[in-house]
Image (cartoon, rainbow, N blue to C red; front, side, top):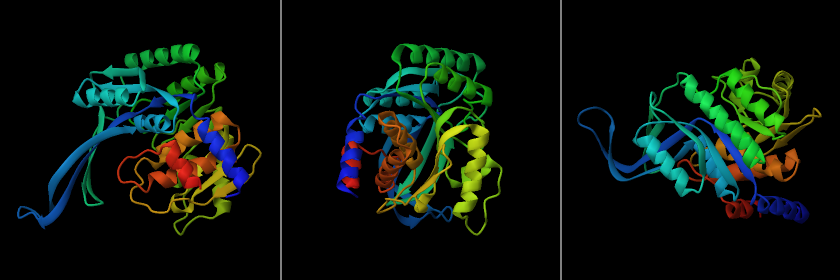
Length: 333
């Protein structure tokens, strides 16, 4: 990387400090049971995991928030948890990370979304999901919207991230109301969408689907034998036209990222990952880093480069992980 370019990106990363991002979305608690396998169970043809340790961390939208804080900025959380032990643990972890839980509300009628992974060595054997995907209680959702609108006016965050995991928080109308509240306050909005919950929002600054999500959102079948840049351009043009997105950033796994801009141009950014152990949470890192970078400077290519390097660090870690500003700078060298 050119020295001047590196210095400019370093300065952008240093400028993350002092930025404030609000994240509204599906909060989750991730748990890990770590162990080793030495034998097969006599009861069934499955491995027996000898447990060595257990851990838990913030997941889903809460992991996006965790990434923002890890990169040096401050964050506020908006979402729903259940009146249960997992919800209490999620709140505890938010406090430990120094994250403002101003918008974390409790719905006693649903569980906190909880995902537990069983890992032996570096291999994930099983994932257990405890969740409810029906719509969040309307009264509680309305209260969340009120709290969110109040926060926008008083705290004036630099940007808002909508993180949709299709767990029942967002309907198309509700999500658009969130965007409209931000637009009225001239606060940019970025979206990490879920193809299983098509929201069709308007006036977004960044939208970050992965390749499969982009095709599904566009309503275009994904080529079985692999896609070309031309087919991605067709997908991107349809999404940008129908969703009114300024910058569309499509993550392409081992192929890096493709950035489609408001002037119709496209920039393909190759992956910066050196080793890939676990892709859990990589998309969370991308939306966090790209949003922060655009808050510093409206340079979408630089923002995508920063996000790409950040994701390259995270996939080299096992489990739902984050990247620090120092780790990001080391990756850029």
